Image (cartoon, rainbow, N blue to C red):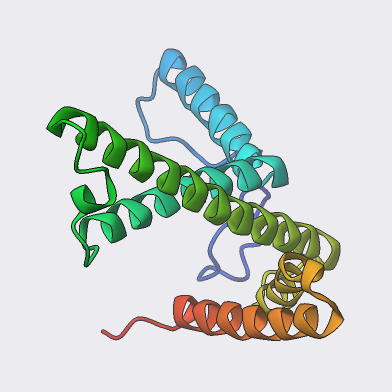
Length: 184
C-alpha cells in the first residue's frame, strides 16, 4: 500500500513502493493481472541481461559476426585479383569455389579472433563490475588492461604489459566517448 503522507507538507510528492503505484481509474482485475505479469517478465529479463554469462555470449557472438563482416569487406577490397590466386588451369567454377573457400576460411579465422577479444573483455569487465559494485570508467580501463595482457601473454611479459596498456587506453577512450553527454 501507499505510505501515508503527512498533511503538513502538501507540496511533497507521494512515495510509493515499487509495484504498488496507484493504477488509473477503471482498471479491471484482468488488466491488473496482465500488468503484474508484464512487470514480472520485465524483472526476469533485466536480471538475465545483467548476467555475466549472457553478456559474454552476446559479446562473443557480436564479435564473431563483426570479424566475419570485416574479413568479407577486406576480401572485396583486395588489391590483387582473387582469381589470380587460383590456378589458371582450373575452370571458372573451380576458381570461384577456391576463392569462396578461401574467403570463408578468412572470415572464420577473423570472426574467431574478434569473438575471443569480445568475450574476454566482456567477461573481465563484468567480473570487475560485480566485484566493485560500480559502473564507471575504472571498470573499462581495468578490464582493458587485463584483457590486453591476457591476449598478449604468450609473447612475454613486456608484450603483455604493452598490450594491456594499449587496450586500456583504447577501452578508456571508447568508454569516455560513450559516456559523453549528448549535445542538444
